[in-house]
Length: 338
Length: 176
Image 1 (cartoon, each protein chain N blue to C red):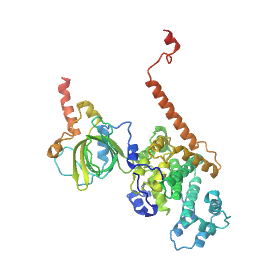
Image 2: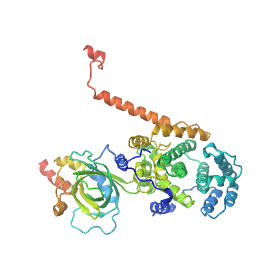
Image 3: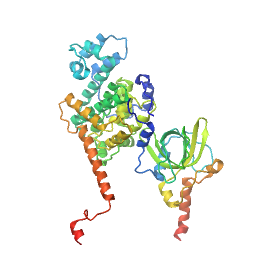
Image 4: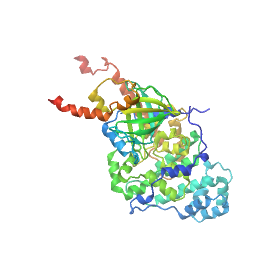
């Protein structure tokens, strides 16, 4: 028996967000820490689009004030993945075809990525970082399809789950460097380390900032609970939500933290027949290639899965070999002669 | 038709099977971090109970500490340095349980507990248990006791902490 499918729109996202962030505010973070700001057009768009009565033409005018956003939105709506056969030339047309919610999610991810990319990071290579983020986002979207939940929220959550890390690790460089030196391989180790050092972690800080930026509550929850791991699948409310998809995507290792999350995903395969890691990885790699963000993907997901399988097969072969009684044939020649 | 997962199987995957036994230090650290509020239970127990509601994954274990049933979710009622009371919807007759307690913000304790008493509590089952710690197991090295004790006797059952005290007290005589 699986968990019952839950319509994401029936979840009290605001309540879950308030519960998760209770007692935490950005004021507990070091005052010297300079947090990023969303592009102005995105902030205004998020505020106005929350009101359903605001006409699409007004929203289109807001997007058009930012040339970068305009280009990205037109690229998105004219891409093959949107499945639209006509050529879209105006933002109001794009908004009408995509819909308010998917546009909000899209502009949020574009705006946040731009805000973080504008800053330098001493510890994290931004290109590799966003490559892994895209990989996680695509993986979260595939898992969301399996869970029959909101794929757009899962993609945005997957992409932005660690968005504050380049800035935090740059501003608090020495402390994060200490973590890198520890070589802890548990997927939740970074959050544990941050809790021990600061009494907050990047998931809380990212979610809190996202809330301040007026990002949708389901996205804030995706950021807040992204280190919940496999356990999120057993959550009575969120087990079938984009939050669970993002939590699974967070198990893919990143440049700052090499952990054994992939091994847990391999275990999940055994109890969830629909969850085939090889098929998912192939789909993710193909989409990542098509996305062509201009950076070579040195760590395709399929290669990670294959190497993991190879390691496991080798380990089991070695275990079988050591369990076998030592026969004459297996003994070295010198030993046989004696 | 899609092939779906079972929540019970997912719960079982969440448990770290590489080291199921916990130490006195890890239990103490976790219990100290539990915010039990100001109204601790007024009783004469050596280990004060803290009322606490923490999500728990429980796996029934047999006398040899091997899994003997499906994992299930439970909620703590109270916790002390010696033991724990949990509420669950499953009735279990296993002599031991492997518990994985996860507080908010990644503080986690995984421990084997010996079931002392299991009773109906409204529509739930309340399981009272004491921590079975690795070092105390080595010290006592006795066979696992059956979970027969109930009522007042169960409350007086030697807790982990008392065992430690006894072991410490008996040390000098052993040395002599």
